Length: 488
Ligand code: NAD
Picture 1 (cartoon, rainbow, N blue to C red):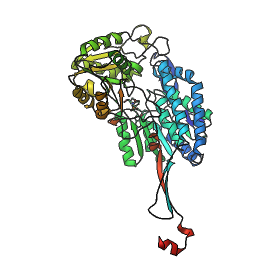
Picture 2: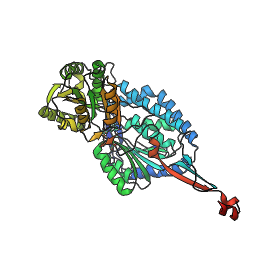
Picture 3: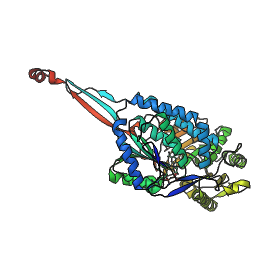
Picture 4: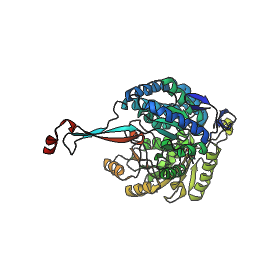
């Protein structure tokens, strides 16, 4: 069902799609609506109507509702983690982390409703005061990917609501169930009807949302290809759009690094969440003097990673999301064989009950050159490509020689190199002695180059997406006599 005006309604199309467990494709979780423009129109109309009263609710009162949402996410965390793992595969430990992001964001956004600061400035004139306010914009169209079914939507939706906007959310058709729980939680928290709506479906519903004239802002997370198409359309429609897109994140390990720490970082940065994080480590740049030893230890560690249904105790890495991604990953593995040498994995895992799911063994390629497709193109799976660098400068240049710019990481004990990397790596996020993955709710999150379009979610910066400035000049010279004014 779609969720419009706090009610669960079927799509006008009568069409549905199946939500399938990627760890066991015989497990059909449910049928969800394949919505069209008509459904989107109904949801946007509800959100536009609700905007006129929601924007008048004092911001701290809106914050009270978000705080309650944080409490309910906390209460339902274990249940929701199981649901999320069943529909998109990552382990329950990881889905709990996903939900924790929403909890942190709910409390953070709630607190910020008391600090939606504008600013004041002196006027050029006597008897005049200047000030500025952050104003809500209207209906926000939120379109997201499936890999963080609760965290990523929460980064957009909760601050958008905090700022006084209303929302129509089009989740990925690979994670619709989690989106419905999101709606249940906001309703229980006390969100008035129409303020938050969910429309299920694929590109058809997504593009109808982008097109809708009453949608004033589009917040998108997904592939660079889709994001660029949406941005082009938003340009034509003169619509504000924030884009969080693909990544090809590099981790550099220098010869002076703590190699145990770096090994752990790359193992979970590359293969955690089955490599399906926008911040996943997919390029490893090793100083040549430690290359062979490090690769040997990494291959050993990767071969011990336990693949399995994310709901089973002991599983460390779940399946990839769907047949399309499985085919794409296996095709890239073939490309990798032609460009370099496969030293771990390199195939699907069909052992035992994994035969029913989309499991791919953690895969490592060496002898990859910076210009190779394996080093340039986003694969979005458990595949790591390794290149050798002779110097620190060469390593930084390799990291930057890529169309994407989301996350990056350097392992070194040299503080000078650390600060040089912070300055020189072209990415929205740089980690020092930590893997490329992870985010904290109160810090800006996003990328440069092919990953973003200049906006940042997280932290204060998210309110730049979901508010517009209103500048106010108050002239209070009316109480003065004309002669007095002329004297100024
Ligand atoms: P995708 O681009 O195929 O789909 C993303 C969303 O856009 C889905 O909801 C989809 O239905 C919708 N969509 C597709 N075509 C559309 C269109 N023409 N108009 C409007 N909406 C449309 O991406 P995906 O495969 O679901 O997700 C994987 C991608 O997401 C990867 O590239 C990954 O790096 C990226 N991602 C980025 C971040 C980030 O913060 N930078 C976070 C998570 C995922």
